[in-house]
Length: 426
Image 1 (cartoon, rainbow, N blue to C red):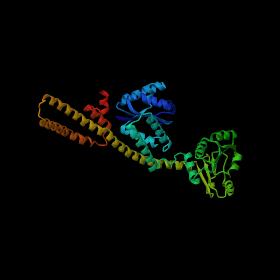
Image 2: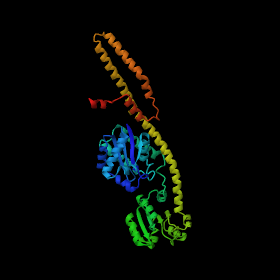
Image 3: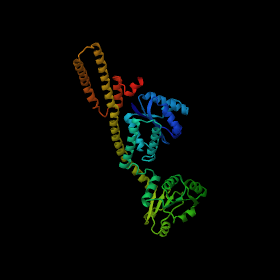
């Protein structure tokens, strides 16, 4: 039995391709059930950044072929159009990929927390529908545990790496919580809009948008749930807010004297100014004032770049953790694959021994009971000695060996059938 991951993500396919493969939950189960003849267990994950099948199968090529047919029938696409965007991982590579996905190491935004919940939802949906069993239940349980360990033992999710998220992270450090603080946005550029969205998502208590063109202020305020105003009104509002975000075109500058007058009425309250205007909208001297925290685009970019380097170190630590978790998973799978194979091998030889012994005794019906027992003991001892070394060696199979494939080859070489197979043919 093999575990495979077959899918596409933001690195292999553009959004216009990814969105074609998004499926509703009832359709997801329909697809998985359609693959049941080839894939005994399955989970389908569909997010804005990825579409992936997690499957257990004895026949990888046939399973992939059936997947192509299913997707082609749903999306009216040729198999060739599917193949060029999809990737395939098997066994240990597939385990590692799943663990990286659950731990947000394979996300567009490294360290984001949403993906773990999405993976859990996809798994629970398949489990409730009876599409998972011993293998996938164990594999996904270990994936979730590994993701939790990565989040608790590394800083992967605690270092923002873009200018807007760095600005909001700094605001949280200055004010602890943003729920009691108001924001004033001066200007309505794209980057200021993105930063403003981060601030709104962080729960600021009030939001004002001031712009030279009032219509633009109204448009952005409507998006953010804020109050629009003219630039003149915005400048007057500066005394009331705790965070000022500036992104105004040339000709606008907040001078030290202006801000110094402003802070006298604030009773010592901190003022955080985020200047992402180019050219700058705030005189650098403002940053020297007591209780004023001033950061411009270069300051924020430097922090973001530093965080990227630190986050890369965290990624290396996280992947080391995941590889250890994959090794433990493989050890668990050894007990599921090789130990039952050993049992089947012993049962197969015992069946042969019993059949041959019965045939022999039928030929000599008058054989004394004492001799019958001696022959019984002799044949049993021979069988045990023949199987002793193979049994010991099977238990010593090294971790680097593909256990799934090793067990499959043994079952094929010795024509071994498990109990379920035997019952199905009776």
